[in-house]
Image (cartoon, rainbow, N blue to C red; front, top):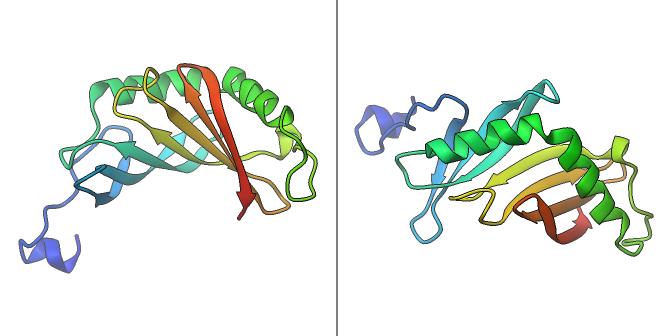
Length: 144
């Protein structure tokens, strides 16, 4: 608990069964910056959860668990979308093994609303693959 919470000037983050909610941003496009253990990788990743201050919805939890179960398939689809891009920043598309998942953006109603996976590679390139459903909708590539 931080000082503002102790003084009653800010509410603490709500308890959540999956996401460790850290910081709330709002009010126009409200979301929580969070962390969660991502089972397929066995480590913590950053998660951006689009929701109100009250926290994530059950459908967002269900989506996250489904993403964990389907991660091998989704990673292959994301890698294929990245491989279809022309060389960027003087680099060829990365191999799937070089993609390090760093962030998952969970929309208010995934997977029907656009959601996103963000990766980094050892060369310091950042890759974002936005999905509509379970199909890539767009790719962004930039230096870290």
